[in-house]
Image (cartoon, rainbow, N blue to C red):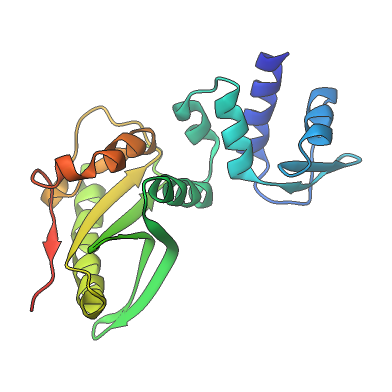
Length: 208
């Protein structure tokens, strides 16, 4: 029964992108909704509420792999997942930071603050990895991260670490311009051991 429910919930995550949404409600899903109303609510043949990250956590508890779960998530879920990982590791996190520079508006998907460090994360829901696209993304992220660090220097932040997180599988290690590119399943280990990686990756330092 657990295996069948796990498959059902993975299918819901990948197929239901918004609520309310008409969906073929199985007895398994209906029973799960009855016992977990804070995660998903079903009325008739419609899913009227679902906490996607809550479902992801439930799936993990049922034995689903992080890779399986990430394949079912969308780009918004990926950003929420990154925030969750940062906060578990002592960062205060904000999604969708927007700011203005002399060259125009900038946006960073997820920003984490801890001590005097800012972690600037670009989330990419790639289906496959393109080296040229990665290099272009890394170059823009380095610029945005330094600009944002410069604006936050007066608040005591002295360094920024740019990072790209993707849902796509990675066959090789990528670090264009010294910026790590991580599959989302590797993010918890990386953030938990961040201090050990700082001498191997790009760390931007505030001027002045």
